[in-house]
Length: 223
Image 1 (cartoon, rainbow, N blue to C red):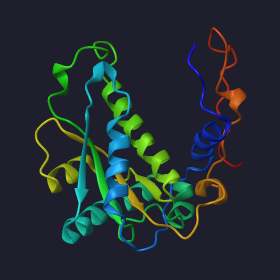
Image 2 (image 1 turned 135 degrees about the vertical axis):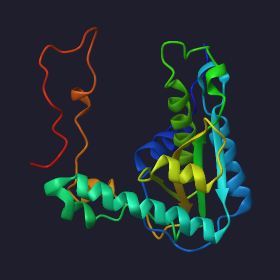
Image 3 (image 1 turned 180 degrees about the vertical axis):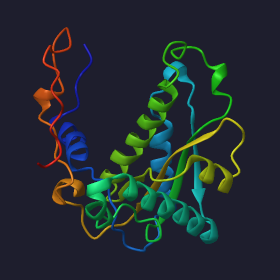
Image 4 (image 1 turned 45 degrees about the horizontal axis):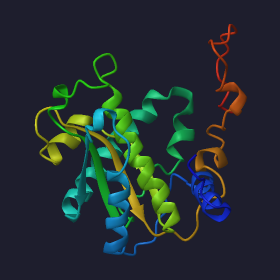
């Protein structure tokens, strides 16, 4: 039988999980290149369906391109606000990204030619996206262990980012990742602090054998 990690190692894994935060406030200091390589390696060792490794990571070092990506996010932020109706002003008060302040800006994307990979995707083609999400989570947890913050930005038009990065036909951006030093980590998820939403009870998300008969809407928004 395989041996578990010792207690201190196990505690460190759970600490990274529970203290990981979606960060939006960064200190404008560079990320050590050796640390960045470790984080990229962590992402690249994520599980992937059929071992297809569908992630592609673009490191944005051109300040003009960084600003253009930020502008694309700002355009979508305003469109999202308009779509939220009565919560528009509440949303506009939220800080949703730190793209101009973080030490590193990365774009995580799905590779082109994914249709060639059938193993594990014949009935669930979206498993390539799930694999990329695993790579992002690997990097997120490793960043927390390294004392670095990371934030996932998903407010952007796919075609706009695709054009800016000159992606090949079929490739798809998934996330803009802000990575860098922070003064401190949030004590709880920022959207919970801002009362945008709250974490669902675990019991509402786990059940046995079959879906519960009661079709209750999750109540994770205040009020």
